[in-house]
Length: 134
Image 1 (tube, rainbow, N blue to C red):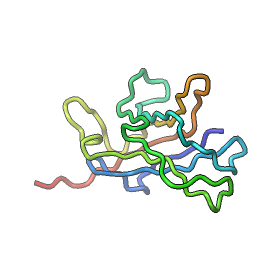
Image 2 (image 1 turned 90 degrees about the horizontal axis):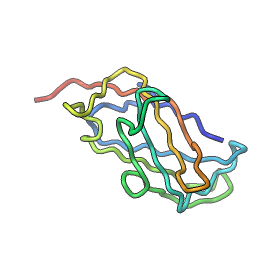
Image 3 (image 1 turned 180 degrees about the vertical axis):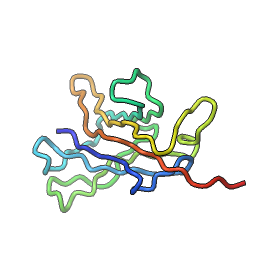
């Protein structure tokens, strides 16, 4: 079952900053951690759920997505996380990257292994804007 994971202004994810998101992925019962070791993963940010590919920002296994920690079937002992890393350039608005603060984008994390493609996490994603510095 896919986990709803919303990034809201309370998460303080500012445009143009280095940031890391970490998620625990759960199995169909929404309780038991899912071992994501070796899975091909892709994360995408889009204006809407139905926006055409490619996304505004995309990350993939080995290119911004890593699996960290140690898997354990027991939720309290599981330290495995999917880590999605953002460099400041990934979210700095430019002539080719049109991102706005206080706009609810949509994002999803998918398993992309052939024959096992499915959504692991999804939700809204809202950036904040800090004051500009010289």
